Image 1 (cartoon, rainbow, N blue to C red):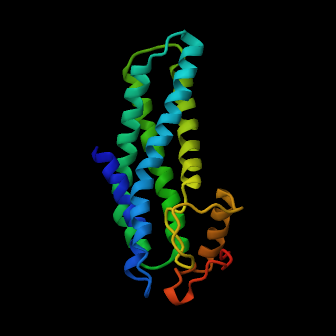
Image 2 (spheres, rainbow, N blue to C red):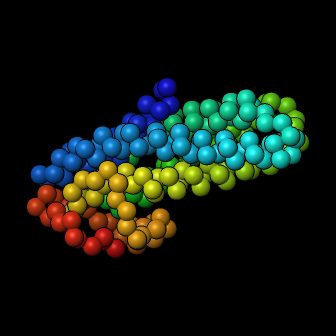
Length: 209
């Protein structure tokens, strides 16, 4: 599916800093991100399909799965294409070696692409004709999809990676999504922090903030 390939390209571009960080290739993070980004889109769509179908059934006693799935496919398509459009921009930012700017732009790109995807879902439901909980289903989908994207992206991190640590497919810590956003916003005000080189690598290094 072209949309998922575009999402995968976005994951690759997130890690384009590997070309400019001295002595630290980090290619496995590129592979991991290329797999994780389309996975985030698919997981979020599946969770939201379940939520939307429950709302439809609660109001009509009819599942209308075909309508919801059509909307979900359009959402995935539009989000994937939007991520593909943002890919060259995020690559250019990552190539500067500035971690803070890369993180903040990646969040902004995910948010914009997710909302564009939700617009696709809303449009499909509007074209399907009137059914009683349509507006509610559109609202629940938007809420559920945006939350699922944020949460699954956080659970599946790292997507960008931090060259101050050795590569790991998954890295759990005590920080929360909003904590990192506030942290990197503060860092960005001071010009942002840069990816460490291989000589600065330390798994015990505290997260810079």
